[in-house]
Image (cartoon, rainbow, N blue to C red; front, side, top):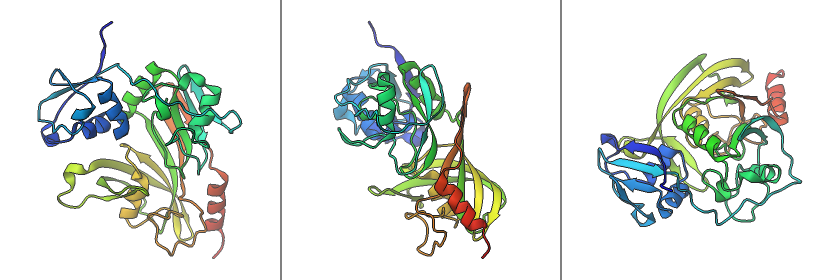
Length: 310
């Protein structure tokens, strides 16, 4: 049976010269490894011509049409199912679930056999998730949270749901609300549009793009409102219109208000006592999906300390 084209993209003038794998990763919200898996499996055409993994560095031209079929790489690896790992499901429906991710727990494994991930706990209860979406060690992953960020995380347990939900994230139709404790007195509310770049990998460090780095930058939009003035800090409700690695953390660090407990972005003088960055994915909404995650214990403890008398 002929493959069905799922996605079609036209290269914009501003994307001229962009590598094919980078372009696919950005447009499809995949890791670059996931984009290369699609290339290796023959799921991509450029200007009507099939391309392969060896074409990953192909420089694209304005106006070229990129087509991605429903071909999916055969998973050479599966997530190690962990039936004894705790799992708290906030909401679920046909082909999807929202899990309450604890801080310190990775979303998915990076290596075969790795344990202690949220996906391992899900795979034990929903073995049908194996091979969904990007497949292999990212099976069913629709979006990600940093290891030390807690809260609501959406996963797809069936391929049609994964396609629908990834499309919704790509089109910025999923409403994500975070609670964050930022150092200092943050302005009453606002929004900021900021081009961000990954300045370092392992450990990742993201910052505002410098002049001349715009081609490699991702334009991000973050809005916030103040919920409470604390002692030396501010409790915020944050919404991300776009989604990018460390977006909330890097944005508030750029504004001079890094998150409490953030070892990457906060100054050494952080005296809040927070043991991890205080960022919690509190709510996630899209069409029939509604999920809320209460503040975890360490977040509540930080708030109690910062509400106390000097």
